[in-house]
Amino acid sequence: MYSRKIKTGVFLLEGLNSFSVTYYFYYFYFFTQQQFGFGNQANLALAAASGLICAPASLFGGRFAQRAGYFTALKIGFGIMIVTLTLGGLAATSPVAHIALMLVTVVGMSFTWPTLEALTSEGESGAGLQRNVGIYNVVWAGNAALAYFTGGAWLEKLGRQSLFFLPLAMQIVQLGLTFWLHQQSTRAQPVATVSPAAVTMAAVPAARAQTFLRMAWLANPFAYIAVNTLVAAMPGVAQNLKLTTAQAGFCCSLWCFARLAAFFGLWFWAGWHYRFRWLLTSYLVLVGTFMVILVVPNLAVVVLAELALGGALGLIYYSSLFYSMDAADTKGVHGGIHEAAIGLGSFAGPAVGAAALHFLPQVTNAGAWAVSGLLLCGLAGLVGIRIKGPNPTA
Image (cartoon, rainbow, N blue to C red):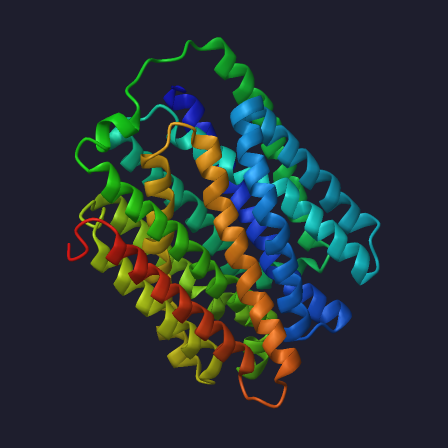
């Protein structure tokens, strides 16, 4: 088990990583819209490509971290992103070059999140896992919300080059901190502890735990189908609502703060653990609010829908990460699976949306309707897994 000082450093890494990659990836779609004239269809296709890269890269990144060591994986991930962000800010001029560098940045990022999740959870007892996963979720969600909320203003004030150099500065700090943490961890003797699986699985039958793990692994990528479709379509939503880039950052990031609030609540209240009704309700809210945000041209309605969406996303994501770490002894591998599922969702939603806009251009809100249909398929799958699992009425 890593010392509390090491894990505090890991949370600092996580916060910096969350801010930097959120600022870069979320506002990359505004960059392509303003710099190269990308519309919703092109940005959705770009989001799909990044998700398609993220899924296998996360699987590999998690397994690599488990095999080669957590800090080694972090050094590689941060190093890759430092190179790509430098090239993006200094050398790339064409859309092809920027897209290629963005996709390689996704590969670098895929070495970091499974590893940070594993470091957070490694060697913790049941209570420790609940505490650390809670801290982890609050830290990354809080910094992501801050980056999305202020990012539009940063982009307007500092210029488009800040899309690369602001995250770059943070990645350089992260790499230096990783070397220091690695050095500190080798000086400390590992602390023997009880496997979290041994603590919590005694209270939850293995079959029930596996059922909830499968449901969470299904629900979370579908949640990211919605999230990444919304993020890629946000420049278009902002245009319909007549918002500037800064105003879009302020108004369209509210779901991030609602998700953060949900993480706080779920951190201190464990009553949602292994309760299907909470997961089901969250998924139903996800489907409804996704459609409202994309098709209702009213800012007040969009804001209310965002707040409900954030709460739903909070429970779905928390479920996936908590159940993954609760059932796993190989934290890096399960962290990779958790992130790969996110990558699949990040691919499927934008891909379906882009295809609908391409093949059904005459249908109003074709992309939104198509992705909503995909989300309903996920709902059917969620209920199907529950029915086939133990105690389907519980």
